[in-house]
Length: 383
Ligand code: PMP
Ligand code: GLN
Image (cartoon, rainbow, N blue to C red; front, side, top):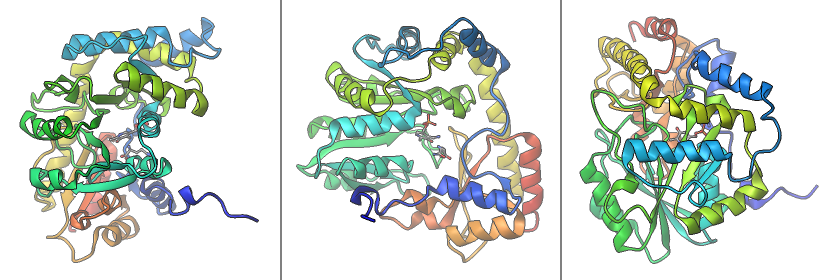
């Protein structure tokens, strides 16, 4: 039989699937893949069921239901002062993952370079490669995961078209400061680039830190393509409802790709998320408190176990240094913990192309029930 396409030849199973499978096989507590092991709120599930009973069950308009595009537009206005036209600048997607694929496919020609700030969410590089683009890594250096402005500037070439930035940041839990965002945006403007801003954890911020959408920086509204998702905000990662906010030209191109990849996204779930977005102001304080208490609890447990790192200000991840615990690299240490301690984590080297800095860390997801976090901490005793 003939070979499958070259574009997928060097793809492997994603680290999240690999770790979840190992966790199941070894009956390990799974703090690897990023998803809550508890359910999202009942009220939004009830809205979804009601929407199904009310007959919202046939194909949605391909760019997304009117109600959801409208509510996305309203929350960007209300929370950030940003104006997106729901008719021309907002597209609903199957989670942020499809959104990222659409943006990259819509913008990147074979041979175009895309700067990825490593450690990165794994689908960025896969989508770039599927478009025939070239990922150019720039490292966010440990321990604070900062970029060196010069390194970023040097990575930009005449072939660069796009920079991908993720804030709040998976896997490190870092929240970018305004100054850091400005450093990137100045280079975007100076070199006439686009910026894909992955903001799926926009509402998972702690200790009074405020989200700064990249599009709010001066001159960045036109150049920034913002991607987000209801999966994190409502703790329902399986619903897979995401969106793209971008200028009319980019939106048009993304919609053309979307129309042939998925055509339309689940109608009742879009309708339920639209209602969910109207309730954000009431819903968010308890939501953030819940995750903050999980973060604080697990951070203290890890501190007591002798892990030494700064508490993350955003997301539901912790990037934990392992150097004082082992001479093993992340992958081997992660395997050892699954087999011998029954705790699954993600080895972050999977999120790097260039630097080896990830080898001395493990990523823990704390979006888990208290009993799950307690069990993991108990299993790690004496490490
Ligand atoms: N971007 C980042 C940084 C993520 O962590 C994730 C996955 N959790 C996604 C995008 C994909 O989101 P979705 O599940 O909505 O496709
Ligand atoms: N974004 C989630 C994580 O970082 C996983 C999503 C996936 O499995 N692709 O763990």
